[in-house]
Length: 339
Image: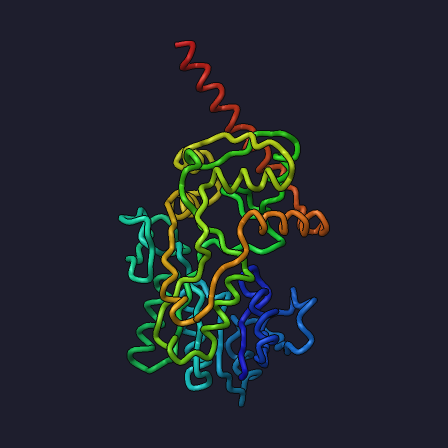
C-alpha cells in the first residue's frame, strides 16, 4: 500500500510518519525538505513546494497512491489545488481539519461529529470549515474519495502544551515556573480541556488509512482524558518539581491587552469546554485507545526539551508582557481596596 503525505514532519504528522512504515506502508513525503532529518530509512521524499502546483504536478506525473494526506492545507484554495492534483490518482484523500471549528460558544460541552460547525472568533477555524465544505462538494459531485479528520489539542515531546504562550512557543512559560514567577492561566482555570499525544493520534489515523469504510466520513481523534487548565498546569509544575504560582486572568482581558491573536486561540478555542465522544473513530478502528496520560506526556516533554537546547527558545517580549498584565491586576486590586 502506497501513501503520500504532504508535509509529514509536523507535530501531528511526525508520529504518523514514524508509525505507518512499521505497519507495512510504502510512504513518500512531499515537502520542502526543511525538517526531513531523522526520517525512517524506508520513507521516500519528493522535494517540492506544494504551492507550486505546476512543479508538483510534473514531479507526480505517472504516480498513483492508495492514500494521500495533506497536513498543511489551511484554506479552500489549498484543497481545490489538491483536488486538481489528485482526483483520479488516489483511492483516498485525507484532510486534517480542526476541532476548533466546532460551534463557539458551544451549546453542549459534549462534542461529537454532528456538533455544528461555527466559529465566529477565529479565521483559522472558519477556513477549515470552508475546506471541509469544498471537499464534501467534490465528494458528492465528483466522487472524490475524501476522509476528514478533526484533531483537537495534539502535542508532541518537543513542545509542552500550556494555556497561554507567546509567538516563540512554550519554553518561556516553563522558565517562569522554574524561576518561581507567576504563570497566567486564562479564565478561572476550570475549563475542561482534552490533550492528545501525537503517538496516540497516530494509532487512530493509520487505522483510517486505506479503510474503505472511512470514505466520505468525518472523524474526530482525541484522548478520553479530561483535565482542567488548572490541573494541566499543576501537572507540568509537578513534573518540574516546582510550585505552581497561578494568576487567573479573563480571556477577554488578555485579548484586549495583547496584539497576539488571543481572540481566536482563547475565546474561539481554549476558553470553551472540550469533551469529546470518540465512539465513531473507535467503531471504525477497533482497539484504538489513547494510552499516554498527560502526567506521563508532561514528563516526556520535559525530558526531551531539557535534552534538546534547540527547543528552549526564550521569549523576553512575552515574559515582559506577562509581568505587565500581572502588575496591572495587582494595581487595580489595590486601587479598589483603597476605595
